[in-house]
Image (cartoon, rainbow over all chains, first blue to last red; front, side, top):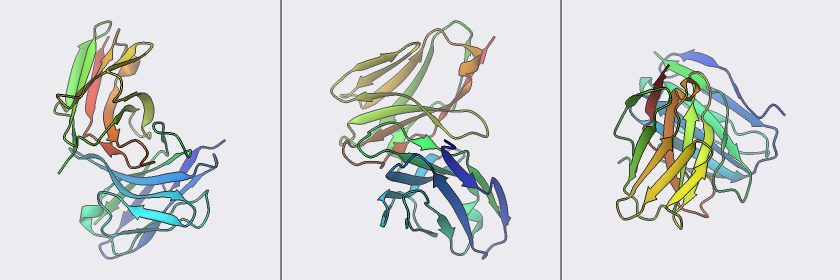
Length: 113
Length: 113
């Protein structure tokens, strides 16, 4: 199993550009989430999904969109990138019924100029 | 406002000694708590968890203590090893809410050989 994969590893955008961060998992996990990690702020939940077709907002959803058309994939879209979205983004998955262990991807480092 | 806080951004400990990492939370609805470990350029990995019905949980060298009245939990690592050097995040959730986790700001642990 590849686990949770994220692409790209690094990305530089200009203010106003849009892009999609990709996340895929091959463990058939129902739960998937997106987090951003910023210095002094820890990991903050952006959006999460409890299954295909179901998504909801986390703590910091503004400026981001998600969709979940399949169990495997959970892309995160930045509609109009802003410097405040410079961060490291992590995707995570967890099987239904578990309370604890999320499996994280390696992260995408995004810089918005 | 951050619902889970780790007030010590960094901690240095000699190899073989005890490492104590602390975490405070404000939301009295939280009833499940976790610790994750993160190495540079990798995603976080699950370490240990505790339910609010317990006040202690052990897994090898790692023990988590929960003080519900103080809304405080701590992670003890005994003995500390150089490979334990990483950033440690505590997290909290309400049981039954799936993947809605709230993370702290992280503590960077350095174990000195």
